[in-house]
Length: 598
Image (cartoon, rainbow, N blue to C red; front, side, top):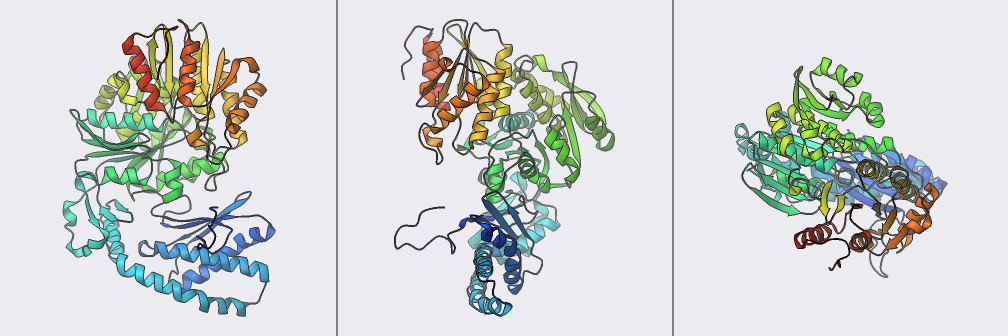
């Protein structure tokens, strides 16, 4: 909760409210947009107030005419979330409804008064809510008509605070909210959707997104994609960058979907964007969930792998009739979740006899497996060999199992979205041969006789996959850099350390502090927990050192190195600076023993 300066108006009407926000699209709670309230639960009274909240919210919503609203409340350990659906022209008012309902619930539990007091409270609460709703409707009611017409015509629809859109890419149109047309004035027959793929999961999202985009480009389509590095539009000849930075949320998706040059869209869809704002668009051709791994527990009401899997599976809510949801048959969480999903699921696996893949092919005609080193993709019941993994640069000649899984995921979802197997094969034969193809993800370089692996691995499963690859490569000595952001609890930090050491008991472990990602932690706190976790896992204390930044960790690794060594460098916050340093040293012919200047 944000501290309130003396004399300033508090942000929320109760000090126990932590956050109140609109979900503009399908979300964890519902296929419909709405608002979610996060509250602290410091005692039993607060827990009872959470149970009372749906009744109070329903009372207010019904009085406003929202008779079909849905209400969901979820308990955590020390916090809870409260959600209600709302129309597109009432989302802002709905945040006030949720907040007032919480205040009423707290008062009810505290006073245990009779129904007469509740009636008196309504007389106080309703007039400002009705006034706010009337003002919001006057401005946004045309949005509802446009969204309804787009849905009736099976067109994607996107809404934000400044504009709304119908259709997508080359087939879409966008209107500012202050200049909305009547629905009858729109040339609906000229609009259409472009093939759109949503990519989510715990690990491999960015690589899979880039792979699918490369497959669309190999098929001759001008492709837009958003990922953790930015937003890009490219065809076979040229590319342009629309934005730089982490664009795995709705803002990145809308930049792609609203660009009239785009003939195919690939959208990395992270759990943070889903939980903060919901999905950006109402429709997608296909989606893929790469895997589910322990990460980000304790944020936005997510406390378990099942919770995380459900959040990732929100992408299923956007898949239209005839679309496909691609899942990893080798992931136990996804296998357990699949029966509850509302769309057809198809599967990929490194096991060519996996029963889920074979059943999916039998039922829907689609699936992908690894068979004797070859990637086989079934589409419409026909199996096609799209290449040998040894020949795919992204797999490091088949030595990177996690990228083989990403290849299977990308090949299958691309075929489901209309890319031919020949184009898939062409993309896989080339992708990864240039470091810029998958910048920041698994890159191997030789520098003065030292092998260097850089990657984005950041959670236990990601580190484990990277460490397994490192352990399989020949080396005289091995070094691993380890670090984490402060929004993981101690258990997750220790799990990261255990995964690192038990998979790669390196000759040197360097723990990096990431000062821009402390997120409420004290300086030195995260490295201390990681060091303790390494020692608990069996690492000798003398092999562990702590440095004040990611860049300094890389410099320290280079100072330590000698020819024949392997340096494993997961880099995150200073990746571009690190990559620039390594490229410069390579151009200068650096070798161990020479200085490593900034």
